[in-house]
Image 1 (cartoon, rainbow, N blue to C red):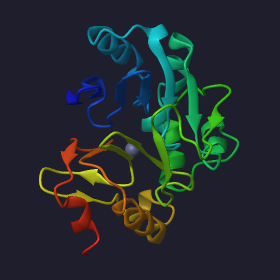
Image 2: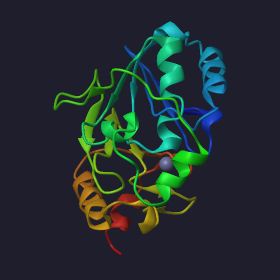
Image 3: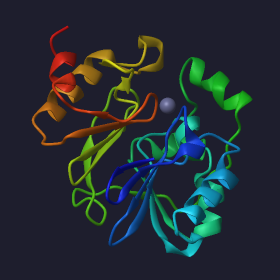
Image 4: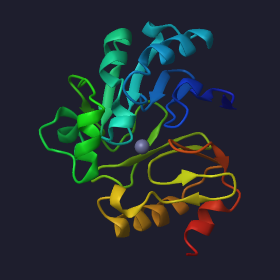
Amino acid sequence: MKIIDDVYALDSTKGNYAYLISGDETIMVDSGRPGQGKGILSELDSLGVKPMDVNDILLTHHDIDHIGNAAMLQQATGATVWASKEDIPYIYGDVSRPGIKRFFSFIMRAKKPENIKSYGSEGVDHVEVISSPGHTPGHVCLLYKDVLFAGDLVRSSKVELSTPPSFMNVDDNAVMESIKKLDSYSFNWVCPAHGEPVKRDGLWERLLED
Ligand SMILES: [Zn+2]
C-alpha cells in the first residue's frame, strides 16, 4: 500500500506492518513477525525492489513482531540492521524480555540478526531517528519526509490513535512523555505497526487531551 511517493506499507505484514522507503536509499522499517520473510521478499520484488537493493533495516524496538525476519532479511539482502543501544541486548537475547513478552518470545521464536548497529544522533540516510522510550526502553520513532513511523508508541483504529495496553509497555509515563515530545515534530502521516496508516489530522494532539 502506497503512503506517499516512495513510502509503502508492506501488505504482507498486515497486523504488524513493516514499511518500505524506496528513495535514494532503499530502507525497511521493522521486519514483521517470524515467518513473514518470504512474503516480504516477494512483495518487494513486485515493487521492483531486488534483495540486493535494500541498504538498511531500521528496527523501532525489540519486540518479536518487529524483529521477526530481521535475520532472514539481513542474510537475503546484505542490509545493515539498526536498533537502539538500549534494545539491542533484548534482540540478541542477552537480556530477557519482561512480563508477557517473555512468553511471546517462547511461542514465536525469531532468529537473531548479527552485527546490529546502534543508532547515533545523526540518523540513517535521510531518516531521522527519534528516541521515544516507554513501550520498550529504547523504542524509537523514525521520521522520513512527512511520514512518522511510530512503531508501537501508538496504534491506530479508523477514528483514533491510542497507546498500547499498560502490560505491553515498560513505562506508561515515559510513553506519554514520548508522545508529547513527538507532538513538536512536523509530520502528516502516522504509520504505526498495528492498525492502518492514518493522516495526522489532529489525532496526535487528541492523544494528549486524555
Ligand atoms: Zn508490535
